[in-house]
Length: 327
Image: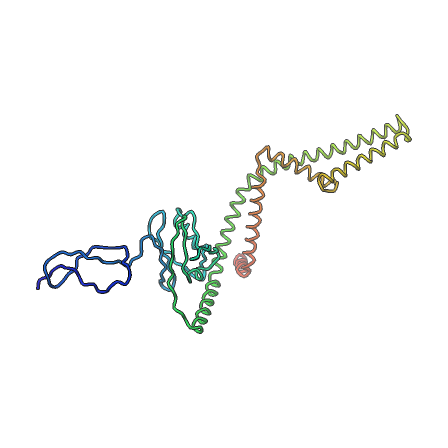
């Protein structure tokens, strides 16, 4: 029997408007005239720029198009461990062209970075990449009975605890390595600043000490002048009111110092104030950034404290390492 080409009868009647993807095909018909017809095949594939969420091997799989390379990329999500912030960070690490990325709910509320991906994938959301909004539809889960749901939650909690226990040492090692690298880089940045600071401190200390010695010399000169005027030039009856007014003038100077500086007039406070005055003056002359230095010192202190916490959180591992070193 001859084979003729013709329009193939539709296998189903579409109940909605056809998708935009249309491809020409030739249909084979077992009877009729030999004619070439063009039919339309409606594709169910998602557009190339769409973001889809599927499940593979029990784990969610988010597929999207990278902005820079225009390639489809799949991200495997661990719902109970991954967060929104870690997912966005993985996205930016994969494509350096992603400058800004954020996730919003369907009504436009921004989702915090600490939210677990398991909670995010319960409902539809919006992913904004470089100010372009993508609507993401998550597959709905079947409604489970309360008993089955409780058993599932218990199983998830058990798996999470087992994963945490098995990977805690690895996580702590990575954290320790990251903190050691951070401390190393901070010390490298602080090394030239510490040298400049040491020179400025030495000069400021020398000037402060010179100022204190000058004050001692001035008081000694004043005492010698009072003694010379009292015993060689005038008598005590004449110099007694003078010494009284000199003492009163000193009290006025001390009180004025307290009003201006809001500090008690003590020699240690005066020394510290003059040292800081000379230090900041020299810092401006040598272009020493005090704010940057203080920030680096704070970061170094925080990193050192975090490293101590990491070492303290694993006392058993540290004891084992000490035993190994002794052996």
